[in-house]
Image 1 (cartoon, one colour):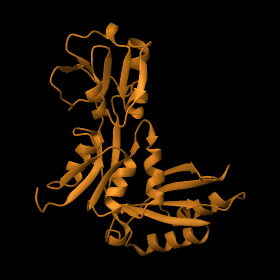
Image 2 (image 1 turned 90 degrees about the vertical axis):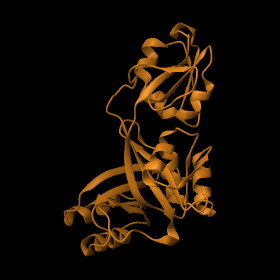
Image 3 (image 1 turned 180 degrees about the vertical axis):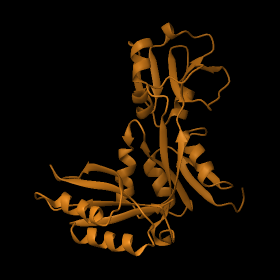
Image 4 (image 1 turned 180 degrees about the horizontal axis):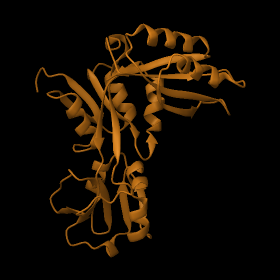
Length: 268
């Protein structure tokens, strides 16, 4: 790997983020980090040229910590990929469900498998860890994990079928680069966040900018503004080429009706 570009993502090896990093940055050396702030820091400090993060799940919605980090840090999302999520219960060989008193996994994975857990492990304690892959190392005589179907560890067996509530489960991942490197020349999608004035009709005024131009919004999500009770930041995705005059003029109009406005990425 000497001389190869580096990409940071959430570890350990075998996590969905690891798979996404290999998909988005083939041939790059993958730097596995313990948490998402460390992934962003690796990019900001120049340790890695790229970073890969999950940003939205089709069942659980936005990955809120990463939405907040994306808004605060000097990065752009410049590429995206979508991975199918296939959750399996991991047990030590010879261990029965009746032996399990604890289930380890990422918070979103546990939420996505809630029906199975309630039906088959109603008394087990659910314990959140940083990633599904990390839960594989927690499996023992009384502890199970929820991991991806691709996970493997000697002495551990996976359930034969996906245990998620919804079998059609997908997560969107972003490839990030430092903001100073700029946006791609073209895109199919633009992602931005905005804070509207705290008065009636301000969000409507923002949305009308795109409605009047016939620009499709594919996502809108709100997050509380830190230290300001009752006010929100909106994360919005629109369809369009960042280079197209109609898109660029609409973004500038949107900026003019908002208290704060920040483009977070443009990608295909």
